[in-house]
Length: 225
Image (tube, rainbow, N blue to C red; front, side, top):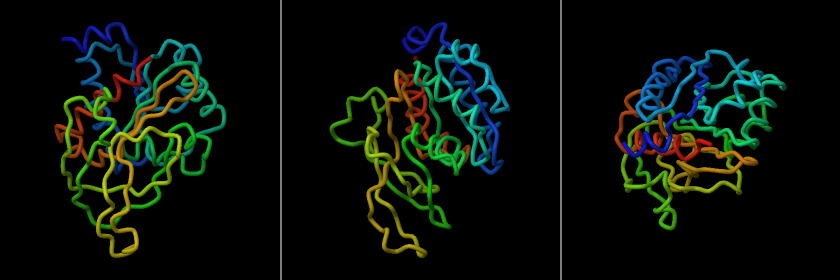
């Protein structure tokens, strides 16, 4: 009830597409439902041309992107970046936000990180909140938890605010990476806008893990204008 009051009359734009392996329609539909439950008016788009619609973006309080790989044009990226800098929030999970538009370093700068590798097999790893970030709204009520899924190895911006980490697990192709601390969830500011990212969420089953679900919902709320 409290969540609905804080986000009443807020508008979200969900942009989905790209590689089908991350089930962009089913995964984003799940969060469209969550957003509506939390009181948002939601517009769903299957095209990056939504980022060319300045009026739409001005009226949008939160962009949720679920678009793995693919290509974004210069004007599309400029439209999204301009909107976030002006205060529209940006949120996403897994490849839908940090394995998007691999050649666009300007996009990676806005999101604060980029996927570069994961082991061929799923890994079991513990997601651990950063101790001095335990009171962050994204982590409220969420302690350490264990998942079995793709574990992303990343290149990250040193300016991000890391909220949760994991230790990189066994990877027969890169045994030297074992035990490296890697960010799992973070936030950053982009002008007046807030950006929320988590690397979790490879599959629908991953999104149903209670802690992951809670973190994404809280992250979307935090990023909202």
